[in-house]
Image 1 (cartoon, rainbow, N blue to C red):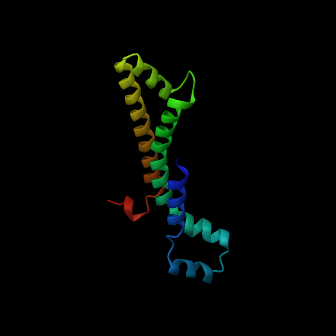
Image 2: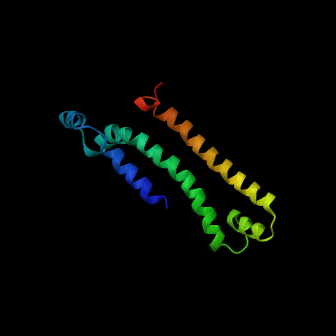
Image 3: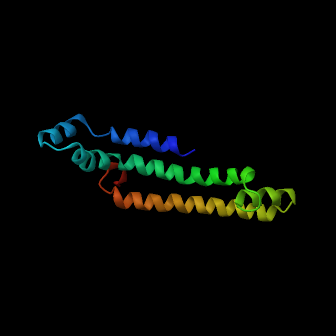
Length: 126
């Protein structure tokens, strides 16, 4: 569920380094690893953080949905499905609110880390 968004964003990010920058690194006789570490990975960071923020919420949703069907006695998905069967909707909404808060906190934490790590990128200015 989270593999392909990460893969697509990582590949898009690694291809963001322009031809002029790559030519400059070749003129400095930089090795592949030096080019990767000093040019391609920093250019890919905004894409990688975008994928991480997307995957933080997708992983939470996937875990809860998997618990609906896969776990016998524990987990938020199991708790939601059993409490719906008991018509205990206040606990169901509490679980949903807790899941939403956890997803929002993970997204916000990654956004804060992104802002501190990629402060130089034009998308973080202003």
